[in-house]
Length: 142
Image 1: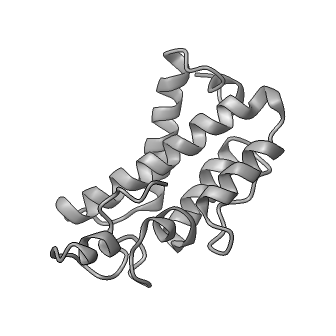
Image 2: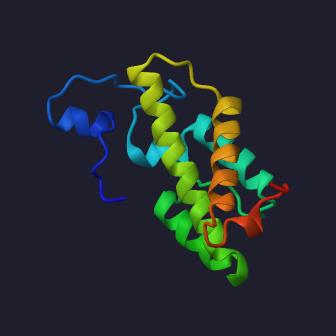
């Protein structure tokens, strides 16, 4: 949100080598807003994770942007589930970033199913470790 992640647009501004297109969807130039809200790959991940959590929140929209999506979704979430929504959405964003890095630096092929499985596993680990609000949005007994 502060523009400090080294996506293609930021690398280009610094004159550093980079791939122009998003490594996850290979459809449009990469920037953080695209990665979190506009990327077709990311939107599939968001849809799967939010559905898994039984959330009625739609995935981030490329038109409204990630920050606005997060604010409006958090406000629309019942108070008892807000901490769970916050941790789930931040976990999902962090895992998208890590998956992107794996594709760039380790030549891994992007995979929605592998990433969603990793997010579910990490969310369950967080819940077992006592993450506040996380357990109340988990759909499975852990």
